[in-house]
Length: 220
Image (cartoon, rainbow, N blue to C red; front, side, top):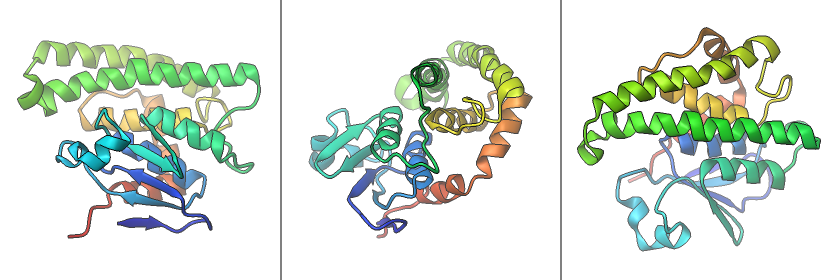
């Protein structure tokens, strides 16, 4: 079991490693310097179908976060919860003010609905074709659509950066960076402005330590 020892209270347990979506949760925890334990179960290993895990998340998906007697799934919800529940003046992760919060939500929904969901079409019908079937036309169309949708983020980052919310790093950046890395892994073109942004954000210490945590494996 991987144990994160930053901080003094250790009541947070994160289930899941090894995917872009589990990376989001690890990253938020590290940005906020929170102590937590990892239950390093993987996707499609059978570990999410156990009775114990199914009781936590009947959808049998990772990541899942336990915070005392509160349990939450879905990576965008997890990182938003952490940012709200563990507000940190030096690393807020959420914008202040109604307009800024609405813009942050717009970014989060756009990334989740347009970028992440499109990448999963590619994942299903190329990397998981033995389960979902091959669909080369759908994969090619999804790649084209992703590139088209990414132009919006690229334009904003190129003119208003360094982050999606200007000078403030938020959970929306965590969502976008994991999607960009996922796209590159799947040979989906990524605009130059987004690539420069990716390099900037990946240099963050919390990103690098979270990457190591997300690669943790269960000791035999």
